[in-house]
Length: 204
Image 1: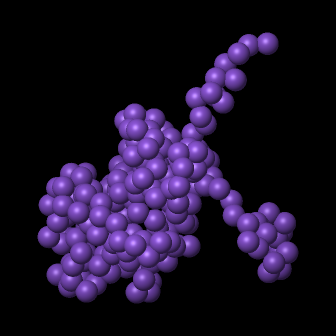
Image 2: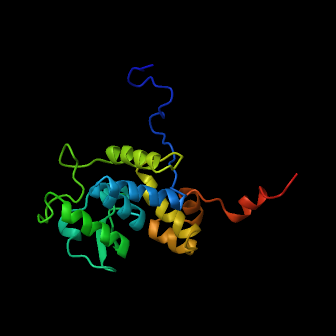
Image 3: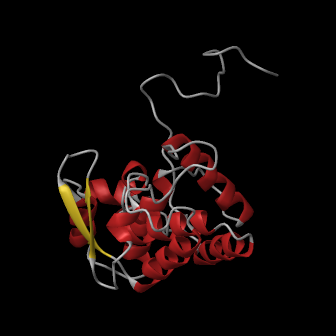
């Protein structure tokens, strides 16, 4: 049934938000990469890989221009202005992210134009956050990942696996994400504190 604008009971109320989740399954992440490469979607592949390897916010990823990444090497810092704080953040680019960038730049329709957006829209000049949100949902569904996903999923996936898969110190993850507390980081990336999780291991 179609609802009139503003009358859909399943839509979040104005001012509220639906919390999205990280992609917890490493196999699903691998399938998403494989699917995008197999389909020749090099822009989307680069966007996905860069998102889960840098923890940049969606709007920050979409603001990148070709000239900011064209001459990067492994370990070089990508410097972007954070949309939330207005401060600049330096993020080193790892080998996987660099390979994805090089692959996309080789196919980018304006890859030699340093002023061109790195991630242009297929239809209009700029790819927007709502469009990225829909893309992430599609990638996850086709990759066999189930949950509530959206544009923040990429950033959350980075934080989740830094802690769970790589055992990075929570203090460093919080600092990288710009959070004010470790508790905020645990909630943001969907990890329960160990003492809370332990409660559910006791049998009745």
